[in-house]
Length: 358
Image (cartoon, rainbow, N blue to C red; front, side, top):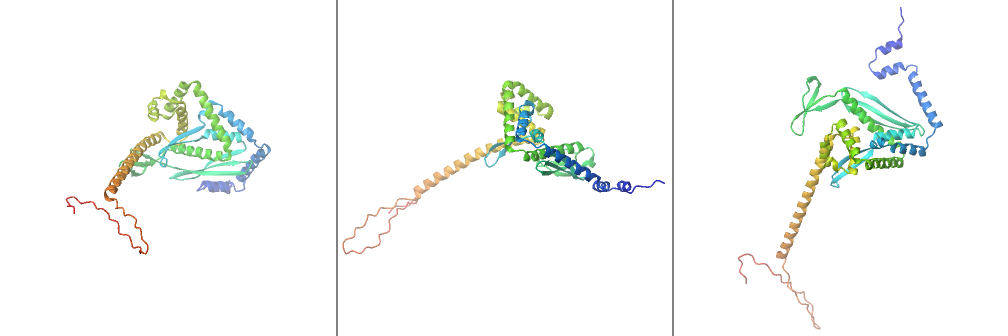
């Protein structure tokens, strides 16, 4: 009769993955593997320490490549209510952060799921510097639901409903695994970018962004038409944003695109590709900014005209209601006279309509 292995029997009945790992690591095999891996990485890092001059040189070499320079930054525009104007927001992309991580060397990053249920998927992104023994992490949460304006064919996918701003019914449905994975990867990439850039010196990052801008400007100056067509094709075929949409965003034909606008479109393309925003959000922001700017200017003019009218009315009222007082000549006392209180000034009064004078 075959003897059962208690360890295999425990693995056969496992309610959770954590219990399975704890049971399998009964003798510390998993812990030993992780410990040896960390020790090996640390030993290699200490044996080959980084040089920031080499880091700068490696990153600037990447920035000299036009293909890399195109994807090095992202761009968004937001309406600043305090300044009452559009504010441009730019930053290094995940591609620049990945290149900086390779140039820095002796850095390790991990992305893994720490919790998952029917409502959401929770992950953790961590980055560690093996030389300085510093580590940082960030948690990401992706809901497993999506909103649809049309009811799905399979009613079992509907978890609930809500009323939208237009009064229509919006269905809250189960999101497919492909969309959950796409959102998870997008949030993980943004978190990974932010964590990596915390370990890279800021002056090196700023110099790399400047070098990328110079590379893009140099290539665009050589053949601006080719650069514009290539960017329009990327928007159209990869993001389903047509040239007519780009013209609506720019508010002029594509043929009139300036080098600065071309660079902004390139950064906007990177923001859309990385999941920073969506095209409907970009256009909604653009339309909202135009309306706010128009309302702000018209409102300012109306307030100025109202204040001017009030000042004029107040000045006219003061002229009518404040007549001049009679002037009293100074009193000269003679020797031996006692000073007395001066008489009250005589104030002229405006006659009421129909009143007969004295």
